[in-house]
Length: 253
Image (cartoon, rainbow, N blue to C red; front, side, top):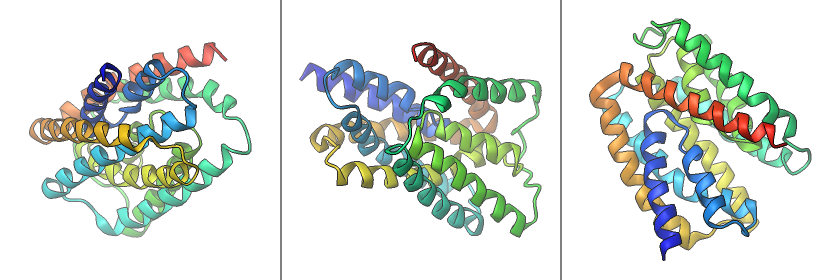
């Protein structure tokens, strides 16, 4: 019971962070590995997805009720994210992810530096592309980051947010809302793969899912109340934490 309590509390905190800007896996995945050190990694990843998808979907629903989502752009992008995640999940069974793990801290450092230098980035919602170009750009984002989520995964939500802000001209609030829809699709693809291979502890995932939704409810309410500036600050904190974590992991390879 103490083990289940620990991962449940971690899932609630992960749902809170994930609902604002993504990056909840930074909290829940290491906790699962610490609490269940002898479990197969695939089972822990599958159980994490089995819980986090519910919080992500709940946050997406909350955002959709309060933030105007561009469905003609986001639905094709979601389909590409789902397809990309399936391809990435298949590819990880064929080749190692070691080069990507080593490169990740440097990519994140570039994202952090760019966001810090561009102090106005993501503060105003001003889509810069015409509808067809925006749809194609969003599909490219969905396909590439969806592939990344299926193949490796850390920071997927943050990458979605950054690219929607930088490339499409969204503010951080609209970008986070849009990212939730695509991230729900990538999680669903991953769960389908893990479940098909028996790598989900459903009894653990179900309990964690309740806490994840509770955290997502609180996180999405705070983001909607305080707006793009608040989401930007949380984004910077999460990306900074991801740099430290991924850098530490890369040094251990």
